[in-house]
Image (cartoon, rainbow, N blue to C red; front, side, top):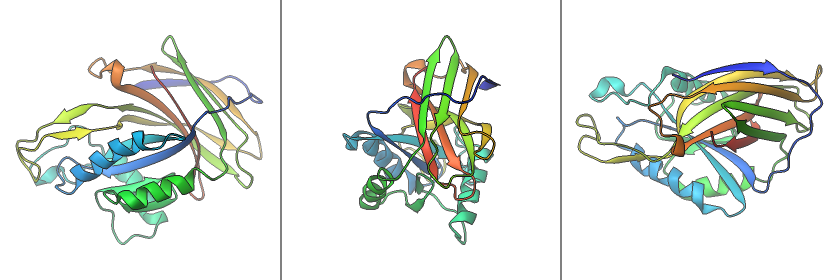
Length: 241
């Protein structure tokens, strides 16, 4: 089980410069979907593809495939709800898998490598907040400031992802296939809301208790900031526990 306790420290902090431009790539996927493995593999390649862009993978396993013969052990109704929220923002008739969403601003078939690369490059050109995340003795230190002009309200999220995960389903559409996953979201927690009319920056500590079943060497903490009105992800940072 993953739990965090957030304690606000102060406002008016100073951000830390990032050497590579962060871009958050969300993949809505499922082990019960036969079309998803190619998208899972693409996500793994995208993480390594750009020398100047830090592709932050969030593989979010939805739960609406679970009734078709195989229950995805990584799935959650939370990720289904997040995808449905995007569906409303993008005015889709229905959600689907595999779906890739880049920085909350572009959605497309998660197996479309050419489109994925193009959208990631475009996302890297936009203005972004200064976001810093560090980890020490089980406490995550969060710093956010310099939100892009025009941002009024932003939500802040802290995720835990795990890479190098494998499953061989014995039933369902992928029965007998060996599935490999990158950046599986083990936990996604809303940690606060920033109203720029009241404060221009945010600083907090979050105590992180990790599930002992997760491999510490494959874990990553992800802090990202999302504009509440447009769903655009305007800043992100990562750290290792």
